[in-house]
Structure formats: C-alpha cells, structure tokens
Image (cartoon, rainbow, N blue to C red):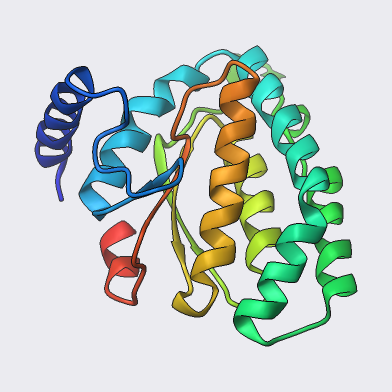
Length: 204
C-alpha cells in the first residue's frame, strides 16, 4: 500500500464516518476493525491529533491510569486465553509498564554548537506505526508500545498474536476509551477483529 492508496482509503473512511455515528469498519469495540485497511485509515485520521506535546502528555497519563486500573483484568484474561504464565506475574508486568514506560520527557530537543555554528535537533513522528505483539505478555506490550509510540507522536496499528487476540483487543479498547475520555482523538490504537500471520507483513 503506497501513500496514494492510503490517502484514498482515508477519504473513503471519512465519507463513511460522516454517514454514521460509529467509526467506519468498527466491529464491536473501540479500535477494533473488520479490515486492516479500515484500521490503518482510522489511525491515519487520528494521528494528526498528536501534534501538540501537551496532548501527548494528556493522552499518556490517561493510558497510564487505565493500564493500572485494568491490570488485573487483563492479566487474568491473558492467562485464561493463552494458557501461559501466572496472573500475579502478568499483573505486575502490566502495572510496571503503565508506571515505568518512558513518555515525552525522554524526547527532548538537542542543541549542538561548535566553530561552524549551531545545530538544533528536533524529533518528529513517523506517523502510523505497526506493532507486532506476542502471546507471552500481550497486555503489557500493548500498554508499553502505546505509551512509547504516542510519546513520539505516532498512532499505532497493532498486529497481535492470534493466540492472544481477545486480551490484546480488550487492552486496545480500554486504552482507547481512556484516551477519548481524556479529550484525545479516537482510534490512536487500532487492530483487526481477526488477526492472523498474513496481517503482520501487511501492517508493517
């Protein structure tokens, strides 16, 4: 999918959204879409809402709070769905990622000076970033990647492991709800309803 294709899909999704109160392509939960094209288009629409660093800080704080609030629910769901690990361990990892993942404070401008002048280095977002998440610590990975990638000004298309589909989608939905409640754009974090290995290279 090239830039022109993405722009066409985004235009089509925006037209659909005008005719419906629900985001086009949404299956059942916020951020979960029927097709990868719809997911990417929604994330593309959402990403410009992160231009202001203050908005990123606001969104990240909401994600941190939601990550802690739902840490146990997500830990229990992960163990039930994947059959791997212990609830207490996954709970601790979810909380650790919500509290400890670096945010915008780590992305400071740099200034270099020398005999030949001055150079200012400013970080810029990529735009829409793909994140492939595992079955071993699915919720913790979603929380971590959401914070770190939003801090850099990006929206995220998640490609979860099929064995951790439900917990990954639940985490994405809960974090999206927190973002919107905090005044941030909808669908900063998206995925597909039926993830599979074929979605991973397509998302990337």
